[in-house]
Length: 227
Ligand code: NI
Ligand code: MN
Image (cartoon, rainbow, N blue to C red; front, side, top):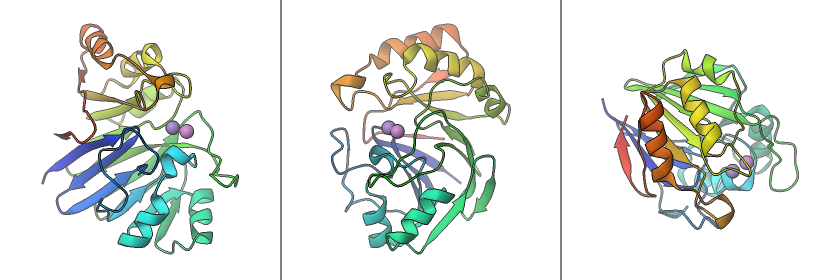
């Protein structure tokens, strides 16, 4: 079994678990950092963290083209149903569910979740994905919260943390998050997409390496690493 993690730009990731492809927050159209396009990606499942346009992104178009199962919180899943997406699975914070590619549990995230048309997207979520090869915590858009320590207690092989600041944690709080979670490796995301969230990823990685026992991994859009 091999799980491969590919960064597609901003907060978008593709997780390949053997022959299954899972997209997290597929945002391509209007994403200056996107390494591919909505009509080119494959998907068996799509996990959506919250309702903001840079996360729900191209979910509807990709789901309609591929028939992928969309996994989201109850409010977003309901909204997707109104957009004609039938293959969907609703769950919510604290709840885990087993799929054919692994187990998905939604965690808390401190953020907003309004959908692009102004509909209520419920509470925003982080994503804990466990595959046969290990566990990935995609924090999605969030501020720092102390309960990240509880998430870390599950044993995180790879954490994906925002460092862009302004809308989410910045580099300082993301470093504190690494210390709470203690993942084996960490990938920074949600930065450099626009000038407002520009960050020095190499400088952040040096601090992670110097101050924690976590290995920082910087992926450029389109680059992959094994879980
Ligand atoms: Ni957001
Ligand atoms: Mn965002």
